[in-house]
Length: 392
Image (cartoon, rainbow, N blue to C red):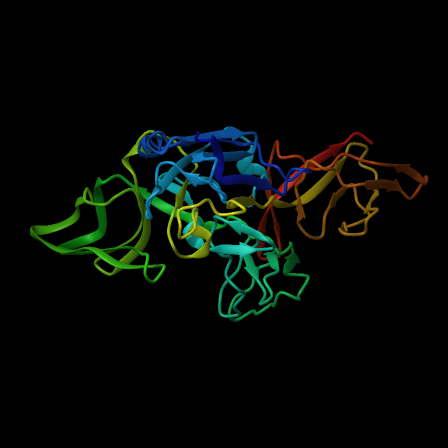
């Protein structure tokens, strides 16, 4: 008698530092049409529960560890689309506003392991004093601690990670950044050359499993036009859905190809691969058994940090203080701003308002929320600003 049950193939969790429990409820995750076929063909069950997606596979229960009845071949790809369900998400998330045609791309090919977790986002780059940083940019030190820029720096004005006027320590997790943003292109599109050109030299590089880099030539072509043109039809129909490096006349960009996104309005794509390397892509061992423990992948969002601007209705001069002494304010004033950006959170800070003239105190007072953002200029930098009106 064969004992049949389901084993855990992999799981994906969505995390966000804005939420006090760190669990991100802001997305619905669905499988692509090709992945639905793969799920059915492998007798799998894939379900989302709150902030997590679980993938299980039909296994022979008489084998330990469990082994799927239907072999999952090396190179198998599972693609999922993340659809945003919270209109305020960009207000409280450390990302620029959405750009037409841009999509975020997450994959276990990134092999991004930190703090005991396997992240699907790209590794955050180590700080370099030859780079330019603006508020909100992320960088890591050599041990892997993540820092958020709270002031600009560039090769002429170098401010290292230990400069607390320009950098704020976050933690040693990994976070989504603009490194994960790709340009989505349909398989047939109009490519703008930017100026009149006699030809287009096209090179597309795909992922090379042997080197774990995008150095595999999949298209190398030159199109000579009858006349000078500013645009042409770019035909990428031979490409399988996925991430590629596209270079046209020397201009390189990272692209994502998948015609299912036409009208899909997805925020992001997740690609989970079963491959021998890197280690983050191993869903089964060399004998075809489930890996124990099964991979659990994380996508981690960082909350936006804003300048908090308190406006006192009484127009009296007051002081605002943080009982934890983490953040300072420009006191005293009737319009009081924080000296540095403060991360937004649905877990309130314990802040106190004091009127020195009559020794009145009010605690706790309202904290910033993501409902409305404006901008404020401090020095040469422009910051998102949260205005909080206090009826005192």
